[in-house]
Length: 93
Length: 281
Image 1: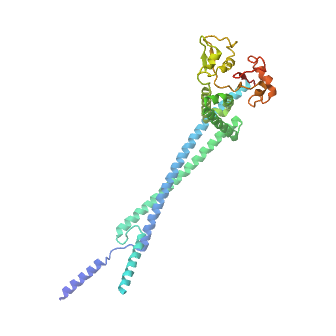
Image 2: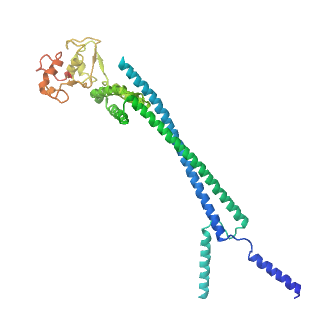
Image 3: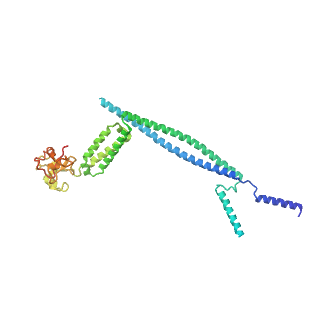
């Protein structure tokens, strides 16, 4: 076997070895942990956001009810004041 | 043996390796760096966005809570104005509302009775109407909910009064050839000739002499005795009737009963079944 053939064979063996041992990138334990933790935190935050949205919607509904109640009680107050004035007027007559 | 041991070790190793990666959402073994970076950037962005949104929501929620407190404060202040104007308290208002609710229940109870029962309880209906009239004078009566409740009770009382009118036929028109005995015996009247006395005593304003009635006279045919009346039954006498708890509760008050019915009872020792006696209150 000539020297050239030996070198070619060696290169082929090296290339083959490199290809089968996949010398490419692989996530380290720390990187895996970072991605997993970021994902969990994002999902938890999105869940919290959804809960906050619901709380906001509930509060808006409650506020609308309260505002309606306020408008109604103000109208009632006006009627009561008028009625009281009528009673007082009839008593003085 | 050695071979089996080797295979077992191999299997355990594979399982342990599998479990290690099962807790992760991605297949990190086959993941490339670009893919990893893209995923990490995406999750970081989502986290940041969610945190920003939460902060915005918290601000909105705080503002809403503040507005709610303010509105509640205005409501309380308005109530205070009402109580000051009327000179009443929250307890008075609650009692007023509670009284209306119980009156409505009472009116519904009466309305669910038969016409005859309502007629017998007409005193109760009148008392309820009087109480409602009194409640209408209260300044609280003009408030929306109370006014609606009062209308509802009034409507129930009106329906009860309507329902309590004596059952059909309430009247009978005299035709030629009629006499009280004959009218009372009719199947759609009392189906009992002896009940002529009831027609007579119930139409005292029209019948001066029970032997003299005229065509086209219209007589009331009561089906039930009224709240201030008593239908005499066989074996009764004035002191016995006066002793009933729903009459005067004392036999010694028979004279009061006699005085109220002198127009139909000429002799206090002689009263007849089917006579309707007035109970003067």
